[in-house]
Length: 216
Image 1 (cartoon, rainbow, N blue to C red):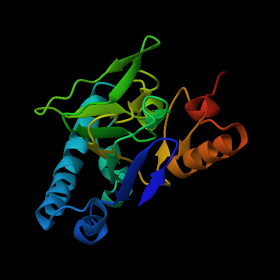
Image 2: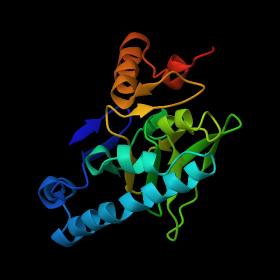
Image 3: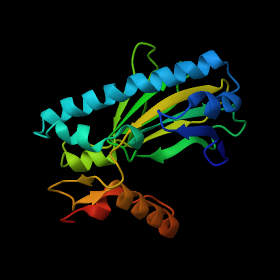
């Protein structure tokens, strides 16, 4: 378990095919029934993510076989976020403003709320809907579709009065799968992560896709 005192969030990460019971039960202090539900959720949402990627890709003449061949089961992962009550709210974030590296991120949030998206320079709250999931476009999908669908910056405000829990499924290619693009030079996930880590170390911030632009 990682506790980030800057972003005031406890989280755990695992691949959906790993044993959720042994990894998560003692951390989130819930029942075996709860952890089995998380495992079932991860197993269900993986094909949903692939279907959504294929549907979006068809609009842009991206062959659906690309996702089947390059987005392996072990490449994607699930992250459970727990936001305890924060006495410093609103001075800290639940999660700092960022964009996701993934192709797609599928988020299920509880009814507490706190997720916000950047639109036209303003932060817009995403109202919780128990009948819906939130789907974010990630950096890699923006590169793959040549900026037609943009990766969206988002954040989570700290929980001031009620503890918050959310579940995010990150749909990703393998580390070595090439991301073909006309706007960006060809790269893979491993290279992208390494570049981001280098930028954060040197500048304190993720630079992201602009590092890979063909024409700046």
